[in-house]
Image (cartoon, rainbow, N blue to C red; front, side, top):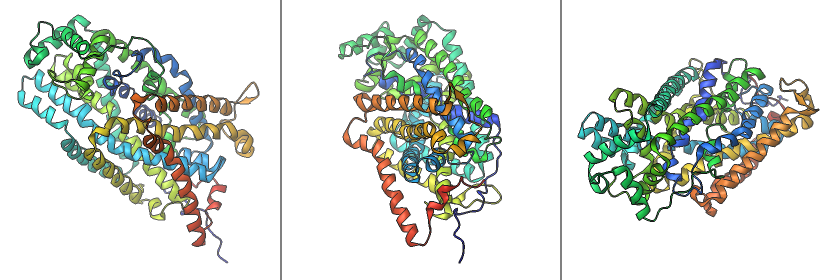
Length: 540
């Protein structure tokens, strides 16, 4: 009788090639601090308090996520992230269910990023550079780019380019990520610099000159900056107080909570079993992001003025007549470039911010989606073709094509239903966040007790007052992610409080759970016992 094999392959075929710099840049990118401002001009319309800077101290418990993942990754340094931990420590069905939900939403996010870059990055950047270069044609091109059909065309072109690079291997995709990281940091530091070197009075003068040239209801006033504030008041808008509000926490949390993303490619990371190394690249990336976000927010408020940013955000969304921008997404990139008052410097800023708002996430999300499909295939929960690795590029070809194909489907959906962009974005934050952060917290809490054999030989065997550090961090992480989920679900401004969107965000876990048992039953009828795989850590 032939002995049944546990995995689709005896070895993964993946190669450990990612350096400490690769993964640090990768984790910073996965939790881009620039993204916190991407939707600020939207959210200020409904926030009960608009001071994002005041939410920075609330990020302390968010670091528990990086700490937990650093320890779990050192314990099981294999590609697949939370799916591997959860399926081996807790339950295969729960591990797959939560990871399926993550996969669904991150594939959507791949499409969203490709679509959104035209609105938050390329469009306003070209428009603003056209103004500084005194080129009306470029200004019109910038506005034309930020339309659904053109965003779809640009997004599809970028999707094809990204797929080709990914097919050429992890090393090349990480190189692309490093280049995007350097451009984002250069643009962000330049933005912080020009904000710091200009006062609110100077920005007012720059803005007024632009509006006088543009014309319209506000441009034909003596002080367009003040006219915007008064126009919002006339339209019935009341600027929220400049104080801390609980919904500000989820908006800032995105700069910290995703810095564990190297976990999904742990099978390709050098020394991934080193706890110290993982702490530096994960928690260190979170600290790096928070420092830069703090500087960016401080000078953003000081130079642009809180009342003005709130007012122009409201008008561009609710009553844009008299303004060039009919979409708040365009404002941040435009204003940051505008204040530079130099075409070259503005280009550095707008390129960096455009990358930081959107495309910087793409290599991270891409590899996560592909490696999860790969891990499912290794455990025989997905077609075995998805775990085939090209011997030359060390890349899973079929999983890569599948991921990019599904992202393109979601890109089409965004083009057809552009008004759903904000609730979709909100959904692609808390849906995947809950999916990959809550269950790993439970895994961390229980690992020292449920799988003592693994814990005793783990590099993460650390205790504080006799209590495993994994357990402590897991409790903090679980509490923090439940708080984020509550805020997203209860504040209507996030756009996911309807039963349908609530189900999409959290119900995909149920879909994955049911799907697991269906796959298991089908595999049993084929004579394959998938339970064997979950008794072992996947092969290297």
